[in-house]
Length: 415
Image 1: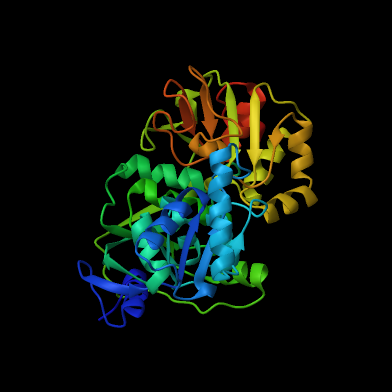
Image 2: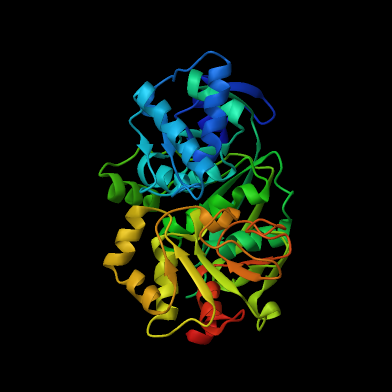
């Protein structure tokens, strides 16, 4: 019987053919956690008396939410995890100077067909390369770290096709918001989204990572891009090898299908206080803004900073603007290409890969009554700080244009 990408990956992981609705135990290729959830994972392992890992090479740990530690408790948590890493000799440990876990997984570890579980909801990001990547709770991740296995109800597959080429200031965030606006945030519960790109080079890996990252905001179990030449080129460039590929069968059946014509997209914004409260930028243009954030595991990649730099070059921002590349490698590349210098000269505060302001942790927490435009993934009340703040989600072009004008601005003005 023809299989979807979801069914192929989970059949391999289960060691038998699976269908939507089946509840099966599967092998995982990577189990991961970061500092904020890591101490919970370790606590579960310690209480179970099973402080061990199934395969040291398949465990990935990164410090990102509390990096650098903003308070004593955060420092204590990181110290505890470092002791765990040393005790079990785990090689794939990334301290405060490497970046956000999901970007690290994408850059260094995720492959087409992998099953990846991590103690963070935005694990779906690795679906950009065709991995079935899912965020789990600390107890389930602890079990996966110990045994190399987890359980899953095989989701219903949903097919999305991207046709054409996006306009100059359009990127993956606009595609994500288009889906959320059309279907709402709870539509894809119990589904796995498989995205087919008709012109692979027109929708590069950075854009795909944004859409996969936002898959959890769609309530999908996973959001995977069907591997193609763009996938292969990305992994060859970043890691020096050609990965094995996996694709769905041509006659595979999907619960439903949906097509986006990229050339017809316009810049979109998610207004407070929900990711599916989607509006065109023109509907909210002119609203005064107190702070702009460009970065996060959603839109902190090289093409995001390139887009922002094109708008900000030779100019000065009129409101606070914080810019944070998602990893140290990306920071260095952005610096080499001159993007960091442009942002600094424009008056932006720039630092390296940390989750910081996205979760209202540090490096730019929103104050009472403030309005924020952010390229991150969530805008519910209190997400970035005060419950009395408002967060508008956008892509990097809208964010940069907004920083430049001090109010929500259509980037097409700068074409």
